[in-house]
Amino acid sequence: MLVQSCSTGWRRVNPPPGVQWPAQQRAQVWRGGQSVQWHSVRVSRDSISGVPFVQPPSCDSCRVGVALAEVDSVCAGAPDAGARENVFLVGLGLFVAWFTWCVTGGCKFGMA
Image (cartoon, rainbow, N blue to C red; front, top):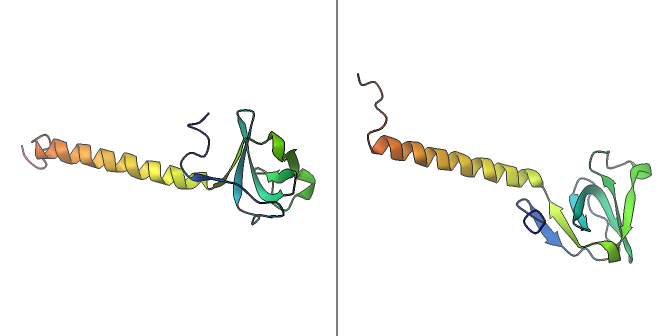
């Protein structure tokens, strides 16, 4: 659970009461070892609510909430950013492996 919570692309936040996040800002709300992703998040004095990420942010009838006392942590961010970093690191690793192989004489382009 610790590895998953607020992993790459997410940052842990302590949202103050009375805050409404921008509609497109994703939130990951953790409670009881499970997380849900919301956007259009609102924080009150004793609860946090949001619209499930698979629904449009403007869908007020889709809004769900939980008491802040039940929440383990809240993360904000964009998980896509983590995916881009991972793709870059894998690509860099493959390039280094290929380059090392070529330097040691493994690749012979155009040689018979």
